[in-house]
Length: 189
Ligand SMILES: Cc1cc2nc3c(=O)[nH]c(=O)nc-3n(C[C@H](O)[C@H](O)[C@H](O)COP(=O)(O)O)c2cc1C
Image (cartoon, rainbow, N blue to C red; front, side, top):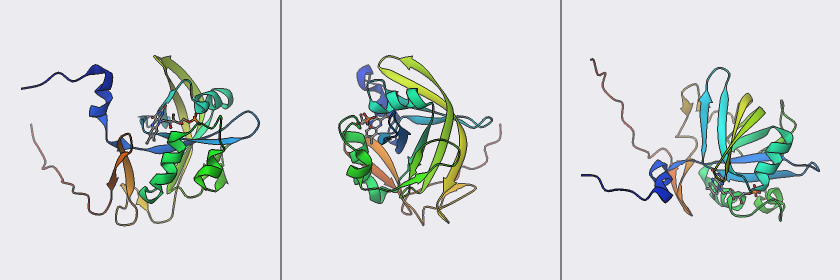
């Protein structure tokens, strides 16, 4: 049996999901940070991602203006900093200072990433698509960096790092070395 689920909160069925912090540079060179859990890879070649950003946010304004941004993955130990990035607007506050993080100059875009990240990717050539109150920004991944020894070709080494997943509101899951996983058996048709 299925029960109908409220369409105004359908997206909760699509959480928990990874959370990242978008850094963007705004008009006067000010760097801003915003928590974002609605992002997804879109294409391998060219390497492309999409992020969904509320059209009224400062981040939407900055990405629209500059056409590029960085997506930072912070470890779950820094969830309180992610929360700061996701609970105030850069229009009113210097979030880099409020998060108490350091910046590193990006290599391929004219912006900055967060030094305390365990990985970050640089995104350029952004195009946007508006729907409802959201802007979907598609952009090409022009560079990607990961901290030494926390990931290999097959992704995160969970014995070395723990990854935050956003459920809803203030609730997060932590994906770490205690996470259970399974390999599926080869299913032949
Ligand atoms: C864990 C978390 C995930 C979030 N994910 C998104 C998201 O995917 N898209 C979005 O528009 N806002 C998201 N938010 C809300 C924004 O981060 C928040 O509105 C922020 O204050 C916008 O900042 P800005 O005005 O400086 O851009 C999220 C907040 C949190 C705490």
